[in-house]
Amino acid sequence: MGFGLITAGFILLFNPVFYVIDIIPDAIGFFLIAAGLSKLSCFVEKIAQARSLLLKLAYVEIAKFFSILLIPYNGGSDKILYTFVFTIVELLMFIPAMNWLFEGFSYTGIWYGGTALYAKHDIVKNVKKDGKKEKQAVRSVDAMTRTKNAILVFYIVRVALTLLPELTELQLYDYLGEVTALSRSATYYKPFLYVVCALTVIIWGIGYIRKVCAFFGSLKKDKAYMDALNRKYEFDILPRENFFTALDMKRVLTLMLLASAASFMLVVDGVNLFVGTISAGLLIAAAVILRKYSKAALFIIPISAVRGILAAVNLVLQTRYFAEYNAMDAKWISGATARYYKIAMLESVEYVFAMAAFLFFIAILMKVVKNHLEVTGVETDNAMYSKRNRDIETYNVIGSKLLLTAVLTIINFIMYCAYHYLVVEMSAIGVIIIVIALIWIAYTLHTVSTIANLIYNKELERF
Image (cartoon, rainbow, N blue to C red; front, side, top):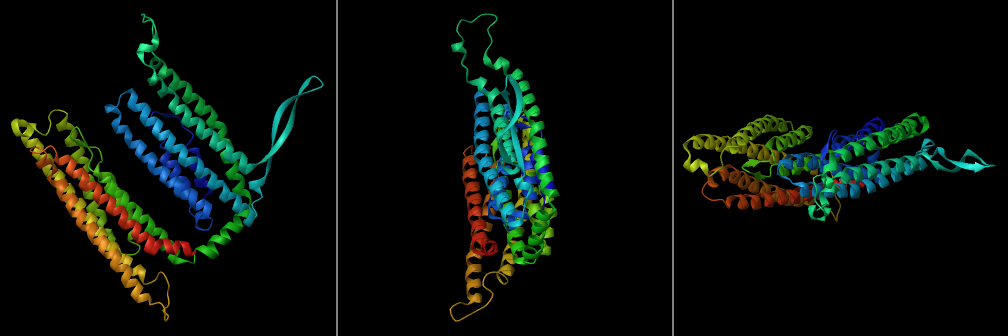
């Protein structure tokens, strides 16, 4: 039932975080938890909600990880802003996710005989009796509530201790009073606070890990509970092929959207911070899933791989060039001209491969969706309902949206190809490209949402 993955995921959340630098990225932990919950989420709605929120939180953590690239451009006030925003978003998503997760576990405990979930633990305190201190149980709490509280308290404390050192940036020098040679601003003590907060998180994390391992270990040892869950999954869920098809296609659509978003061109000091390698990797992941339903999807992999390699090369070349020159120097400095237009050419080649990969993906997706329409939805005709007519109507809606998505994809990547050539003469081209890219990404979101709502969400709701 994936309890091993869930345990590993929670363990990976134990490490301290400095600003936005996470030694063991929390995204890995959240993805592991989500993977461990995949089977239970098929038949427990609250766990499905928790899993969905944890996946979204994982994507937030990925954004947090890549915000490290902005560190050279950030001052103290920027750092506290980023830290504060990420901590608030994390808490707003993690707390309800844990509430839904343990509500789901409570449901499984009632319906599938989970005795380990409700094992009692005594809360012991020192009390005075006849002038002597003695340990006495003051109340009992079940294992599930105890573990949930331990996870929430640890995570809240860890997030708070991540923010605490950055708060020193709020002090203004004018408020220090009399300035002397021995005066120290609050930021002087930030390294010390980093050490103290990190040690606190690590020490607290030891107890947190013990409780997590003990709880999920006890669930795995609850044989009657595990057997009941396995029977439910094997006999009620596995035979339903359309259910798993819908899950796969939802993942494909999500990865397609993320690949589009990761192709956004964000140029800072001449360097595109959204490296195309990430988008290529996401599209490859989507193609790997899509190949179950169309072998032609395999051709997307080499095209995207070439795009990913070119993107990495372009990043290196851009970083080296823009460390010495800017785009306008290509007009006036002979040494910069050849280097600049070599970068422009390679960037154009990268975006041609990117455009080809996306267009090929859209074409295969259209074919797969058409095939799925034949085996989903209402499977019989009657006097009031024609499945064939309904499928044609649905396919026309989806086909038109995918076609427009393809057109916007072409426009977007043509503008990307032209960027380095046009920016030399027209600095405003950057704003135009951003607007076009946002329109493309927004319409891609609209398209994948429409496909999911018309076909795959309905299949998931049936089960």
